[in-house]
Image 1: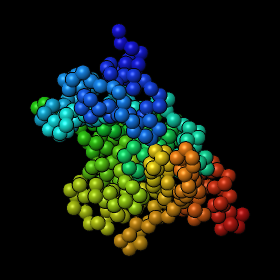
Image 2 (image 1 turned 135 degrees about the horizontal axis):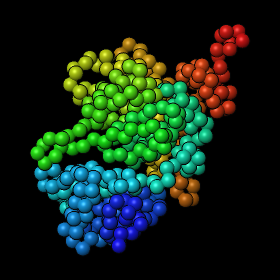
Image 3 (image 1 turned 60 degrees about the horizontal axis):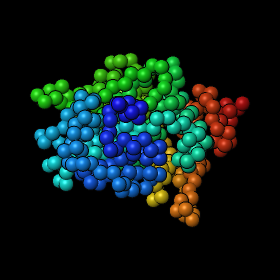
Length: 373
């Protein structure tokens, strides 16, 4: 009989099922039939779980991939998929993985994390999230940057939760993970080519199509190809308030990566023109970092100010400060306002949006002084 847990995942995961049921396990990583690792609280552990044979592992991979209409074989030995509960899956077969099949499952939180949860675990402060909430309500275009496993999708989920209920949101992902709870959400998912080489739907196809769907906001799970150009153009042509994530280790690196992705579109645009597109499209960059102790932190919030000659100018709004390590191996840290007034504050005040008191005190409404109020 299928277990309740298996029903939640949409498939019986065999020897991996107990690991998937462990609430503190965030990721399960299988390297061949004899090595199964898990990540718990940011640390990797080798478990005692084993598959009876390489064939048993391969059969599980086929079930997982097949359940969402994907395929994996020697001709297509790499595949991204998802479980019914939204957990992200990556599978590889030889010859891509030399030592046998691999299966990596990033568990999807059954209960979506809220701002209070991220504050409690130290990802950011209440004032920081209050500022970001006001930016979302002011329809700022947000880019969440970070390395693998830093919590970009989790943060994007939280930021998306600030979007007003009355708005129509179109989400675009390789494997649907986002958990938006608004009523009017359209979820789009890419698809690889079929056995006959046809039927492929790319992220770029979906971004272009979404512009014909009358979206109030477009949320792209991750920009990693030529769709970056279409995303920037949509941000610059009335679809403000959009969001996406990007793999990069620093805000400046994120801008460089965006330039590279735009060049992949094959439009042969001058570099200065690309930078002007980026500078006018992106308002706020939120940088996520995974620290040595495994904790995931927002390490900077940066405003894109504009262009100076050929360079995009940035201004730190919040900056991370790292301290020592306690007896538990935990790193003391804090993220605080830099004291530099972000330009977007004027938009927040013009829209009469709620701004955290400490931010309002630090960056008062200068319009009153200018107008002589």
